[in-house]
Image 1 (cartoon, rainbow over the protein chains, first blue to last red):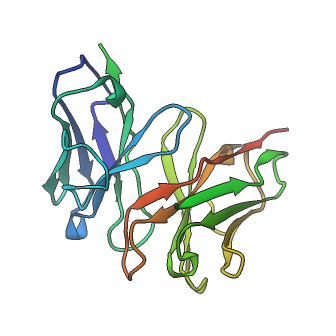
Image 2 (image 1 turned 30 degrees about the horizontal axis):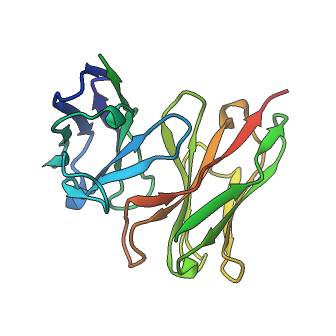
Image 3 (image 1 turned 180 degrees about the vertical axis):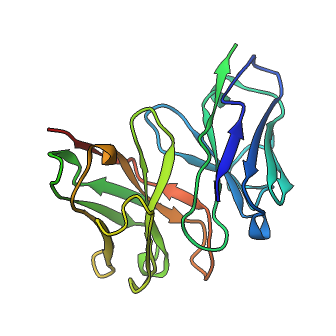
Length: 108
Length: 122
């Protein structure tokens, strides 16, 4: 399964809303789609699993949506700490657990 | 507190071998599938391999199949990745990662180590 993320780079200001897209080449079983945030020099951090469930400790400004082949991560009001690279990952069925190529969220 | 600590990275020539270790603590290691994920410099994430809790079921990305092996020692809470016939394109930070749950099925990864850098170059 190939995951395609868009846009490649998103330039926004604090307080704005960010919408990141992830499209799968085939329908994901049980909406087995996760979103991760990665900052420079750090390991990825799980934000969302099963397309729409927030991981432990994740602020409610992060939300996930979608099903089948089209998914989105929305950050309702950007804070300075949210500027990072975001990856989607499919983990359904069996390995390989593919990742998207990433979307860089940068400060405008 | 869950902790994953990778070690064993370094500089190796093409065709060489290296063994990575991930030492786990703070959870029941033997009950969790464990994974290796890598990230080439300035690039995205690539899942590499997984191993079941008992060590009897393994999976590999096509890019490393036949060259890498994964194993674990549950008595020592350690995960290993033996990398043979290394190529320049294997250069990456290698992370070990634990899934959210230990029950049967496929799950996302909620705990990651800090990574260890493998550089393949002549």
